[in-house]
Length: 353
Ligand code: NAP
Ligand code: ZN
Ligand code: ZN
Image (cartoon, rainbow, N blue to C red; front, side):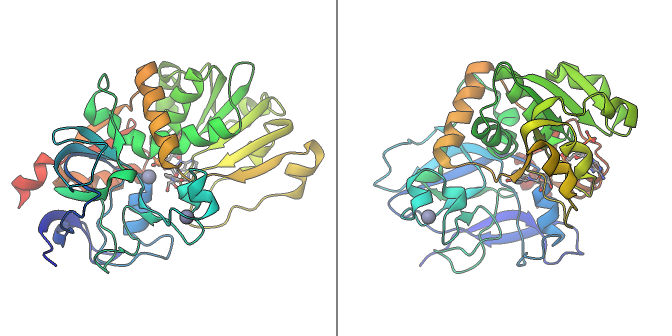
């Protein structure tokens, strides 16, 4: 089978910086959409994976799962898209489509395991899947999303992961008017969590370790902001929140946030630090609290989130970078020094070659 070569940016090992790589994409099969990538968001999961912090990376690794671009060619059975459409691809590019979860639109929890956009076994090529830090990608139309026309394309890219990863748990735990919701960690995910929870009608309390974000969290939509390093400020919220979404990427004291929940409140973890987070029994027992997790969202729910964001004019606050700034961007991400999502202008890939 002919396997077209595509320019990409990735790495051969956990220690090496990202650099130019040539990868193969499959030729379009009847249900495939070929997309020229315009922009790709930079998720902290890209960094965790590139550096093998979750101990599951297969190299070479080409990250990127916040992909937006233009359809440039189609398989002959594609019915949902036409050449020239603006489309998105998030964290999933395939699943078994037969298990109970796939049938319910929960492809992210597919029993045999969904195919992630990068670092998953590629059913077509036999390699790993390669993500959006590249010129083009070929994806089955069932895993391609429509981008609302009223949204800025580059600022929409982060919705494909940061948007759905916050939208899905906020919907699952029925966040809405009358609820006080905490969003912890105001990074790429957290800042989307604030915007989406607010648009759902909740009273939003943002928790940040960064004094520089304290004033801005209100601009993002938070009703109240708490500097989480200040025990006095934290104590004022003990037992006050119905739901907490924790989007912190590193080790932190989860018990300090469980203490914020009312009786029967839930804390959903979306942040995925490398090491376990110790939970005290007494953070849960005395108030019948639940400690949960949530992973991205299914395809139908991702489209629902994009349409919701279109309706409410929600996009990400972004800082655009060229691909050759990606290693520096990772260092800044580790310091929490981005407001609030890096997005790579993929045009820059051609000029570094
Ligand atoms: P990010 O932009 O780097 O944001 C993480 C935020 O966490 C930072 O901005 C900072 O917020 C806070 N933080 C960082 N280090 C901290 C520390 N040592 N102590 C306390 N707070 C700290 O990352 P992201 O892209 O939003 O991703 C967040 C996490 O979610 C990552 O672990 C990522 O892998 C994971 N993720 C999970 C899913 C899923 O499906 N569950 C999907 C995507 C990403 P403040 O400055 O406000 O304190
Ligand atoms: Zn992500
Ligand atoms: Zn399945």
